[in-house]
Image (cartoon, rainbow, N blue to C red; front, side, top):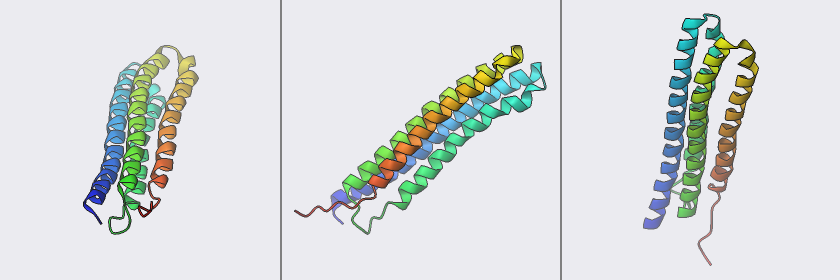
Length: 163
């Protein structure tokens, strides 16, 4: 393995790290923001506590998505085999794609979760539209996970450097 191939391994691990860290930051922010809305709504109407848990749980899923893709990326890093810069950059791209999508989606869940929970306390018929908006934010997270998985699988291909 040449010196430049060690750079590929470094980028591969950076991809796994970026995926997990960005996903967990998004999940933490979304959970905290939606949790504040839950607490505020619960003090006004104790029946809202169960309904208000939905955005909190949905925010936490972003961390799981990041963990899953990070494990997939790390399982594809084999420094003792032909792991090149191409593989490392593909894994970095996969991690950044998924992590950034989870981060953005976590922020969206937090904002919608907090304001939506407070809105449902005042107007109960807003519950279904709020859940629908939360589902759309979940779709954004899934798009990032799916594209990240495709990139991670492409990053596990072995490219021949011989001409």
